[in-house]
Image (cartoon, rainbow over all chains, first blue to last red; front, side, top):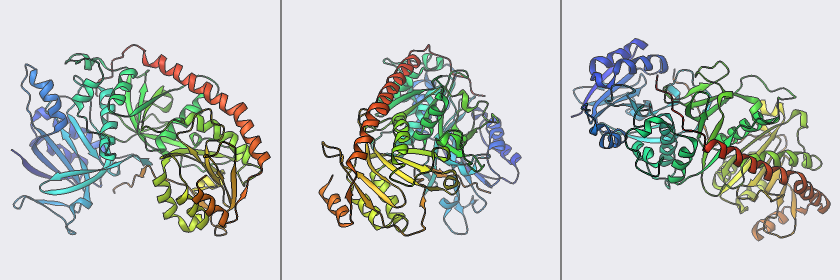
Length: 486
Length: 63
C-alpha cells in the first residue's frame, strides 16, 4: 500500500525527518546523511512515497533476496525532490504550485531498497541540485509517474552497489545501459540482475557477483546489450597521457558515457561530463588537444550521490591520473577511432595552412567529437545566419555516413570566446588506411569538399560568401550544461 | 560526389582544388599518418588484451 508524506527542507538537518517516516530496513539515517551534504539548498521539499514497486530491486529480489534466510521486503520507498514552488496537499493528495506545473519544479527521485545497507537504489537526479557539480553532463529525459502526474526529469541513472548481488562494475554497466535504453529506442531496457547475469557465460548464482568483475566481463556485458565496446588503456609512452585524455574527452564530448577502470582503487565508475578550466587559455597551450583546457570530470560513482567531480583537489578520493583505462560502448558504424582522428587532424592542420586561415601551431587547440548528420543539419539550421547560405545549402545536400567526426581548430583567443577558426568533417566509417577520410573542411571564408565517391583524388573549393565579421561558434550539442538550482 | 551537391557548388562558383596540393596531402597522409594510425590501433588492442585478462579484482565496498 502506498502512502505519501511531505517534508519541508529549510536547513540540511531537515533531511533527518526521513528517519521518522521510513522503516529502518531502508537505512534512512545514512540516506539523510548523504542528502544533507550532497543536495543543494534550492531543494525545499521532499515527497516520500512508500510502497513503491521498483523493477530493478524486484529483479534482485526474485533472483537473490527472496532465497535468503533473512526476510526482505518486496517494496521500496521513493524520495522525490522539488523546489520551493511546490507543496503537498494531504487532504487532496495533490501537488500544489502557483503555475500548476509541478513538472517544472521537479528535480528527480531516489529509490530506497529494503536491504539494510547500501540502500540507495535506482535514482534519476538532476545535476542542477547536486552540490559542487558544474560543467556539462550527458543526460536524457526520464518520465516519472507520481500521483497521477506525468513528470519529466533530465539526468543520468545511478544507484549504490548492492555489495552482494552487484558491485561497482555491474552498477556502472547498468547506469550506462539504462541511459542508452532511455535515450535510444533501439536499446532494450536491462534490469540490474540481468546485467549481473550477462557478465558470465553461465548463471553466476549469488556469490560470484560479489567477487567483482574484470574488464573483459564488462566488455562482454556491453556486447551482449547490443553496443560495440572499445577498450582504451593509458599507455606509458611519451605523450601518452595527453593522447589518452584527449581520446577520453573526444568520446565523452560525443555523448558516450565512459566505463572507467581504476586498478589502483580496484574500482569502476562512469564518467558522464566535464568542465573546462576557468582560466583563460594563453599561447602556447600545454598540448594542442582540449585536454589542456580540462578543469574536471563529472562522474557517477556508486559510493557517492551522482555527479561528483574528479578534480585536482581529489574531491572524489581519486584523480584523473588514477584512471587506467576506459570502455566506450559505441554504436555500430563508428569504425574510425578517436586516436586516428587525433593523428589525422594534426597533419591536416599543417597541410591546410597554405589554403586556409588557421591558428599557428603554438596557438592551436584541437577539439574533436562524433555527431550525426541529422544533428549537424540541425546545427546548420539553427546557425544559418552565422554559417551563410552556401555552407548551409551544401550541408543539407551533403551525403555522408550517419556518424561524422567533427574537428574544430581554434586559437587560444577564439577558444576563450567559444569560437573556432575552422572545422573538418571526417567519415566515421572510414578505414584507418584511408589517407583522406574528409567530407568537408571549412574556415570562415572557404570550404573544400572532398569527393569520396570517386576513385581518383578530387576536391572542390568554394567561396562561402559568409556575412563579414561574423565569427564561427563552437558546436556544443551532446552534453547539457548544469544550471545550479539556488 | 553527389550530382546534387556538385551542381549546387558549381552554381556558387566552386573550382577544382589544385591537384598538386591534393596529391601532396594524399602522399603525406599515406606515408606518415596512416602507418602511425595503424600501429596505434594495433598497440591499443595489445594493451586492451593485457587489461581484459588481468585477474579478477574485488570491487570496493560502498562507504
